[in-house]
Image (tube, rainbow, N blue to C red; front, side):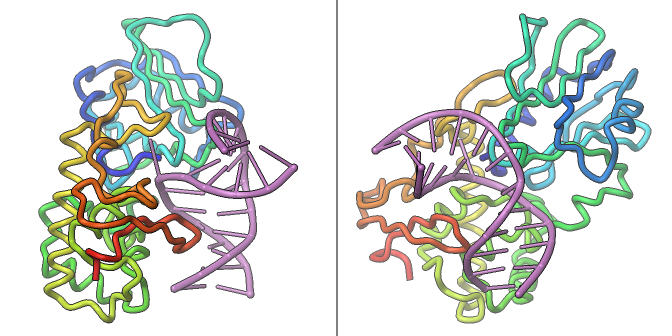
Length: 272
DNA sequence: GCGATCCTGGCC
DNA sequence: GGCCAGGATCGC
């Protein structure tokens, strides 16, 4: 569910309530823990202070100092909730709960369990090793982006954007939106796309992601930020979810196709 | 490169 | 009951 703008919105909402000292941790028996064990997480977390929250692509990195971070990926259905006080029982599918020294709580809820909970250090992060630079990282120059794209000549543009190894943070909604903004056909293979078009694409991607952040992300059903607020970006999408209707700006009809077993929405009249 | 797969819930 | 969903990995 959450893509870069949603994760960034969550990050910002949580940053405001930090730092806080962790007193107690609850992990559900089916918590999606990866590359480490629940016991190691309990050991690392208890008594430590969450100083700040970072983000790389769709990963949230809770910095606990001493070169240790709690890594959380929200998958398709993951949500994080900050609670000023313990209120009754935990929601169904709560997999992680941190209770802070002042009685406040942080909960990670994920029905489908496509998310990830893990531990990392600055120099050993098995997740970040696998993915490319964050799309909003200034280190990702247009020249280096074009170079990275050229490593995947056979991918369609849609698959290129969803590939987190090229650069990280795009998901299905913003990929469709960015391709519309760049006026590029999602079915085109990278090999048929010029350097100029790739530069245009990167610009469109960044503009789309920033717009998503400005509107606090896209809420279709479950997405809420750390304080329970809905996003507003769903009211500004040009193509996503508009099959058979016109693009929001009225440029043309939106068509829905399947690529990599996922829905792509685009406007054949405007994207080439 | 592409499709199946992990999992639950909501909607037709 | 079947299909779909904002993600990512694995095997062909």
